[in-house]
Image 1 (tube, rainbow, N blue to C red):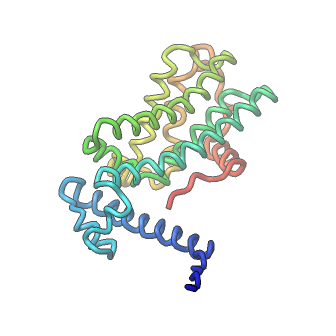
Image 2 (image 1 turned 120 degrees about the horizontal axis):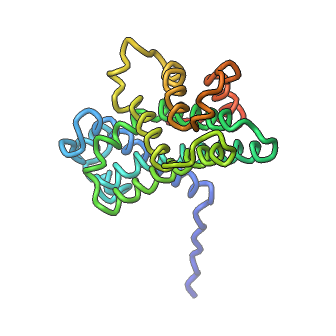
Length: 250
């Protein structure tokens, strides 16, 4: 009578290590592609270039990604998702506290605004890549990225809306104003060369930009108030960041 040979199942810990290794290699390929996309451009970079930079075989990138567009989408979207969640948490906290305590709308907005700009500073390489290479994505992927942008814009819009409900900010064109704020913030990443010799850090840019943004948002009556009661932007922004966790990037 033949004896049945029993094979031992693969240990769960080994499966976990395999998944971890797979993720590490996937991220190594993505990081290699990211550096090449910024330096050489999306179209000039080949999957063979990416594999060589990542130290893997020529066909290995296709083990982790469908194609080059999939790599690009992964690079940009993972950072937007991470920042979006952190900004959402910061905004939700600020609005909830404002509703509960009747906080000053300007202070609420300043906190969200400063947190957003610090996120832009952290992700500036990813934002630059998105501006450079979004045109290289197919329609479906490009629309997904645009949806993420609209989500971030909506977060800023909520802070503006709170100020409008309290009578501090004008209630017209709130979505357009939120969009303009995003463009101004992204300039720190996309036009960094323009700030050379003028502003050394994102804190300098926040101090410079905040009065201009508030002037765009405020009602006529609010803009005529004395400025001596106005909070300093760096203090407010750091209060939000300390309470909610900094926006981080790999």
